[in-house]
Length: 203
Image (cartoon, rainbow, N blue to C red; front, side, top):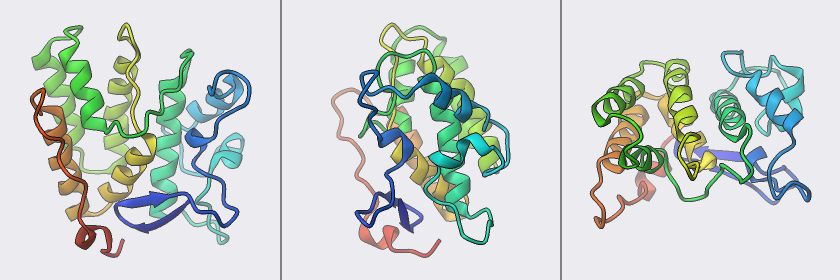
């Protein structure tokens, strides 16, 4: 996986493995084995790269051992994926389903108070740091699992959001996109993805 901007995390064909959640085990209907998910959940609240059982799942390690913004973003996404996929029989990585869209489905389900859920989403969206953002998001991800048809989301897109969150202007863009997706009315057009001028900016 390479990162060519604050909005682009993608697999390459240069021998680097795709993000963990894009790997499809031959057994288990595409669902990762339980021991892998347990290892990923150990990453919750831990420093990126500090859990040896997670090492095979990373694609953004640096040779010098430093914690790059890319590694930090991937680590939080892996840990949340471990929480989300736990006890689920279908894959919770759903390509094309952005975070705000998944949370909108939760809001529209009627399972939770809209006002209470709005406050939780606002707490998440106003986090000052990536660690705080991921912390608030963890409870929301757990709530996604409680729906009659558990709601998945795109973890590759979430990694892009986590990477952008580490830059002030990128954080604002993620917030706006989250709000637009979360409160989008049924039948309205989906907000477009960032244009080339946004994608090509330096990290």
